[in-house]
Length: 217
Image 1 (tube, one colour):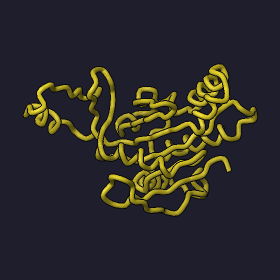
Image 2 (cartoon, rainbow, N blue to C red):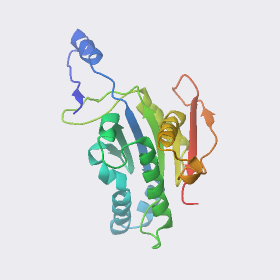
Image 3 (tube, helix red, strand yellow):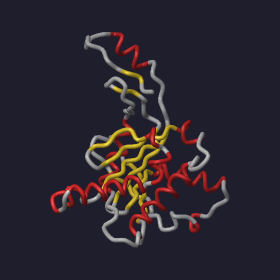
Image 4 (tube, rainbow, N blue to C red):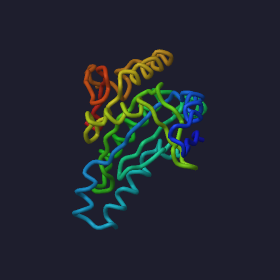
């Protein structure tokens, strides 16, 4: 559970001591956002858009496999954080390659489902985080903060419907898994992954390398 940060004295040295004692929590951060959900809400009734949101979130299978790692929802956007220790303890999807394969397969199924108007399209950003801490400023809430969480959110600006954007840092983790498993990238869901791009994101003091894969095409 998160370290609860709650000090009423803004000048307290105890705050600094507490924060300095908190270890980093390396892992994988995801942002998943539903496309055009506001437009759909204005043009359909709750029984329609609510059903499609329910279908979409319940069909994203890794949400069901990692329910304790769904950190927060803001509107129709979800944030997940999977610490390495949680990932490696799973019997399925227990490495970075398994995660990205499952995400690609899920988005592909959403896109190509035979019944129209069953699901909503999604976009995804992924980053492997080392600068992140399991802290919360609200009691009994689990949360994660750190500059790598902010960078994952920045990557969403490069995502669009049915596109998964991933940092080069995360992609390197995936490639290492493929090497260990003796897999060739052309035989995976990442066969058509883009070349590496570089972007200066707002607030980030150095360029970020990333790639993306278009799913369901």
